[in-house]
Length: 163
Length: 163
DNA sequence: TATTGTTATACTCTATAACTATA
DNA sequence: TATAGTTATAGAGTATAACAATA
Image (cartoon, rainbow over all chains, first blue to last red; front, side, top):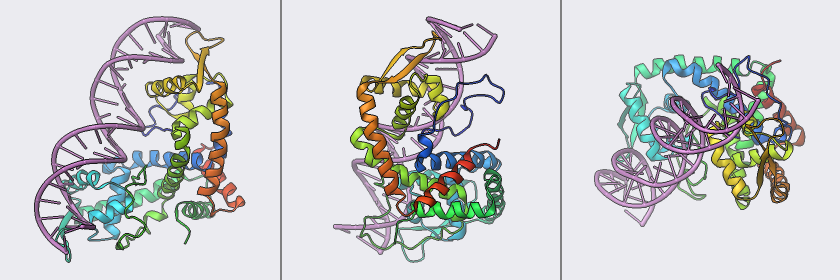
């Protein structure tokens, strides 16, 4: 499946003409199809609700990792988020220009730089993580707390390699 | 999170030097983060196992919808897969050039074309859907059958709008 | 007037090669 | 020799505008 980011290309406006229904029952038997649709649905909500902070998913992920891992290096961010180093450069530069992060010399490795949140970055992430929590609850409002917990556990079993 | 398609940019080769672990516990509390990682893990496996058929995820999705909805139109494919019409054109053209699909005049709408599988396309999809099933089982081998069923049900609750 | 399908094109995201400074 | 970070650039994926043919 290939899916929209903006939601703009959704097939139809709320009151659009009826579209002949398509049988998607086979695709719906695939875990990959369902996982992709669910993640895109949540990401769509995420983008809308994070727009006020001017944060994309990857920006939020970087800032969140920096918040919980002060002094993390670009190398570690790339590994944790599966972003290629050349593609992280501009991202980090923009966050630094916005005054959300600062880069300090790494204490033990002269090649590396440790990334830290600035006070503004810390303040922004306090709000952003709260928003992320709220938005997650809204996007998964059809799940009970127990179901949400089960869902997360099963998803982690899928992407976490067996011991 | 932004993640690789090829797996090539994985942080380290199997026996690479140890990397200081990063605390991802916060991100792991988010359904969206876990759903995205799980879907990417399965898609990575999908791409490897479908390479012999020269099918990407979107190609497989299109062919599968055509297989189960003979005569489906481009318009319907776009809506079902959230692909924008201009981006479906080349995709369809390639599948047609490969002899996997054919487009026939739509019986009741002169503007539209109905898409059908050719015998070769039918033969390919029989094998490809079998491969998809096997690959899904392998990619989710840590789940029991009951867990896999639960996972699919909960994912559908996330992306399916409430009645 | 609205819709299907199309072309052309712009924008974003992801990937590869090559370089520097340090280990 | 290998690694962290960077630059430049190529390629894939996704978006918008505008058009012809048909409804």
